[in-house]
Amino acid sequence: MKIGIPKEIYQGEKRVAIVPKAVTQLLKDGHEVFIEARAGEGAYFPDAEYEQAGAVIVKDAQLLYSGADVIMKVQPPQRGEFEMMKSSSTYIGFLSSVLNAEFLNLMNGKNITSFVMEFIPRTSRSQSMDALSSMAGIAGYRGVLIAAQYLGKFFPLMMTAAGTIPPAKVLVIGAGVAGLQAIATARRLGARVEAFDTRPAVREQVESLRAKFVEMELVADAETASGYAKEMTEDFMKKEREIIGDRATQNHVVITTAQLFGKRAPILITEEMVKKMQKGSVIIDLAAEQGGNCEITEPGKNICKHGVTICGVLNLPSTLPIDASNMYSRNITQFFKHLYMADDRKLDFEDKITKSSCVTYNGEIVNDYVRKAIRKGADT
Image: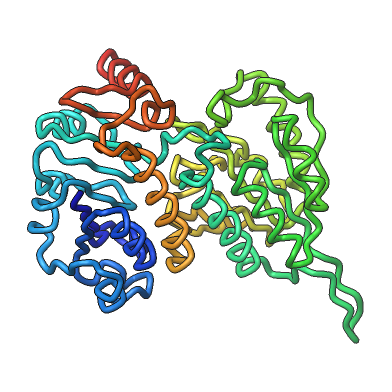
């Protein structure tokens, strides 16, 4: 198969879908790899490394898109990119943020088969393909470093000639992949850390990182079969906000990671709660791309309100493009191999990973979740 790797055109995106090391692996499997000139430049992978690995450098994006059987990307394609793809080709990459009726009609009109990295189920069998978890871990790490940058005090305990300075106190809301990495990073920096999550299974993981687990009446079925958090009732959310509000006033940094798959992030920190926090505190809202867990978060901006800095951070994995590209490249390569493992390259829709991640095929929407979401949007 002819695999095309375009240069990402999304503003600020430095990652590349495939790194030179992965090119060698794909060539061994009998594929051809074409990469747009300077596609790896933002992640410090020059064209020369791709050529050495055996890839063909294509200077014109139109030629790349129109000649590839499979397009692999990081950011969802913009309309112009999809229009350049040849009919009956395949797209693999992130896509959920643009899954609307207009975009789906465009794909189906060109009979494009699309596989969405966000829809890969979180199971032990798909761990090597789970790009959401890979990128979430980077976001959790980077979020703590940003907090340390904006917080007006030391993270670790400091013994100085001017006296002893106690460590910073950090509250992490949500102990998924991003939250656990945030806990580990904050602990490595010497902070005193506590974490809050509605899922009982994560308590042991939190405590294994030497962080305190904040008690609440836990919910046994707080996550979906695919490993994502469920939306809770308003009464539950009210109780949750009361606990978070109490803990937030006692911490210097709050890192929020709570997201709902395919929906707006839940509001866990209200403006009234921000007013009660210590002056000079910092909120790192890792859910900003879904609207934010803090009521006054402004996605893409760092603001100071009521004496608290609220960082609406976006696309943090792109700020560590070397490792982020390496990790994503491994994920998407393993996913591609899984999809086309048969000798005849025929897709197996009896397989759970293949079926769950496919959105369009043979000119139709084949993903139940997307089909229901589109139908619901049309009804409203």
